[in-house]
Image (cartoon, rainbow, N blue to C red):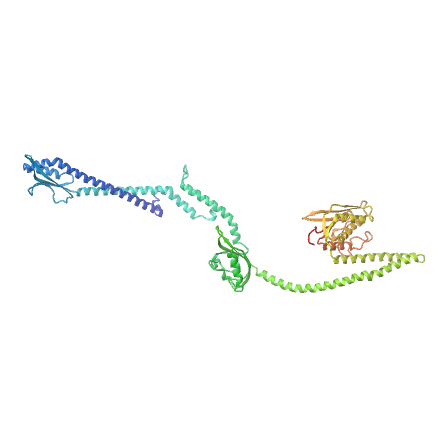
Length: 600
């Protein structure tokens, strides 16, 4: 430790400790020394007074006797004895104005003088025969006091210095060296080193002292800071690395923080904008009323959002989608403002183009609407033509053919009868096809009469209607929920699907059709399943097209329009239909319909 003493003295706290210890101890020692010296000086004076009293008691009678008998030798001996007393310098006897005897040094400066009249009783009368004068020299007394003062002050200074040094070394060992180590640790502390605790380089005391309390408090603070830092760090990094521009201002709108994206967007470095007002980004093309509304909103504690047309460092103008809000302190007062901005120039340009496209699209939609209206009118005219102009000749062909077969059967050859039978059959088929084409057209034009429909009850009714055509088949209808739709159209959907299932399973030894429902992804999915011929899923895309058939007419007669009608009616209800199958393994048709109370 002594080798490190010069280094220790270089510490300001060490120097102040020694200085104040010396000043305080020296002052106390000086006051005590002065009090002690004064007390001892008074004792010395008291001793002089006592010697004066002793002279009066012991010497004065002998001197009176010597004067009375005029024994100068005796007087001289007695006066010399007095002058040799400690602190006495001179003594004389005077009679009738003359010095009878004297001893000592009269020239020395005296500080105390005593005079005793010499009186003698002669024949009952007391006569004054002379005077004794004694001078006490206080220079010796003061000299002794000075010597004692020098010794006491020197001793006290040495003691003070030694005590100060001891106190300093003791305090350094017990306190300041640990404070120095603690200061080095704190000086090197950072958020990355918060996990390193402070440990005092000493033997732990039996009972924790104030230093331990400081270290424990610091380590607790360090742990709290580390926990807070670990909690805040992701937020800080999120703000710094955010894909949108973020800056924070004080209440006077002076910028205090900007993140990286702000620099990338505007081109300004942080040191170029910190302390400045965001007005520096104003392009001059944003109406002042926008800024007025913004400040009124955020100053009142609200959140302002809107678009600003600002200017970058290089002068480029750009659009920003901006949200600004106040940040309050623990007292609820606004302390800062935070602005979150996103460069939406590309979006604004895209919106402009979309607006232009929408305007042109509206024109095209109007044109297409007009074309569709014309096409619908033409389709209605075609339907009317088919309904009246085609079906009437077709009925005539069919009727006349039947009359020929009935009335002229005897005159017709077998080939003629066969040809007429084929005419009747094909005219019937053509009539059915025309009817289904008209039905498909009506499926897209007839308005929907929406109402809650018990689909299970409707499916059982359809099964009963078709039971006579397929007596060997078994149709199982599970409990089905209510749906919302047009009862007539839903009847046609079930009739077509159940009818198809019965037709394609009719060749099975035990034809079976199942109508059921399951819940899938929060929606009711209905299905019609059969154990019939099935189909190859490679051709499923053709299944719901007009006049599309996956089997020959000889195997399963039909027009190929029924499933197209089903698909159109289900889509008009807001649902969808799809199928799953495999050859000779039956088929399952799935479809969805809206529940009661839902929008179409």
